[in-house]
Length: 127
Image (tube, rainbow, N blue to C red):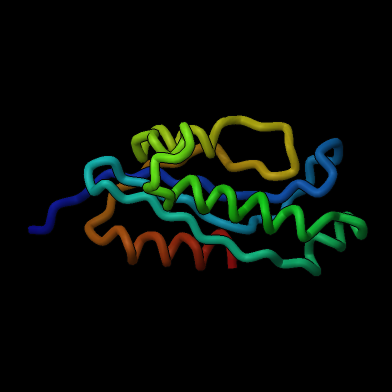
């Protein structure tokens, strides 16, 4: 029997107008402490976002999401956040924010194949 590993994930959302509380799912972040796994993936559905807010700054959104990705992948130890353990990075990204980029609350699960689980969740929740 294969081992099951616990993981947590959160959906990354864009909230074009925070006061309206409408959002578009744009990405997923998933981590497993035991597997030392932290992955983030996103795509920006420009048309959907601009339907909610025509003048939303897509270029700034791309920069901000790239910064999230760098937090997950940077191993240079040049910044304080890059020195965090992966669970601390996950908690930092999923901390409650009142900005235009937010995450869902973290959700737990079990998996025997973390990469397949990531892809299935990404397909279901983002695409």
